[in-house]
Length: 308
Image 1 (cartoon, rainbow, N blue to C red):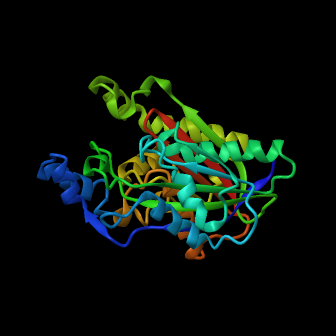
Image 2: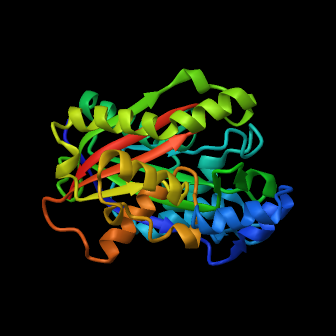
């Protein structure tokens, strides 16, 4: 079923935390801090104000979306499993000001930072099965203000707070979704809690896993990598995408890492923030094909081919 990304609303907090502070809190030494800055090219991450609740963060993205049409389904994709108490009613609090309380809604977190792509995959299935459904609202976002420890993944990345609202519409041609894939490598299913031996193996095979996953998604769309104008990555670090570029011969300058030093990795939202950024810079032409990629600990690789 044909559908596309009609609109994107984003919220990136204006407050920043220097990675020196994040890494020092996590017990890192000066060498590790220099490594993160020089090789990984991350210098700071956005953080919400002290006391700001998650529903406020998600609402800011919805406000930026300027929603003005009927929504048939709401999907909320997030990475952190435990965000609020079980009876908190997070989505009700988010949706109430927008008169969306009666809209069907579901949360998705099974694929960690790739959950946004699983949500888009489910949206495609829902569009195909429900002929009277025309619009799905995808909400993405996490924040780590409960503990700084969640902001650092060892030798990999530093994570900030953000939220994104994405309006998916049937038969929309603005950013038409040509294919979506969620690749799962269950050898690394312990994710954050993997043992040192498995972690070393994952680090060794990590980029090769990404390449295998994106080639599967490209094949679904009957597109080759040479036809892709831009890759919109998750902002894990520069080293990952430099290696990806070297192994695939895809130009590093066409992998959009402009925001990496400023905001680092932001859970499920990176690719969509990068798409919004690219559109705001007027760098996309009609017919351009874009590859979006995100990886979740576990190991999940979400990817999509989009035609502008």
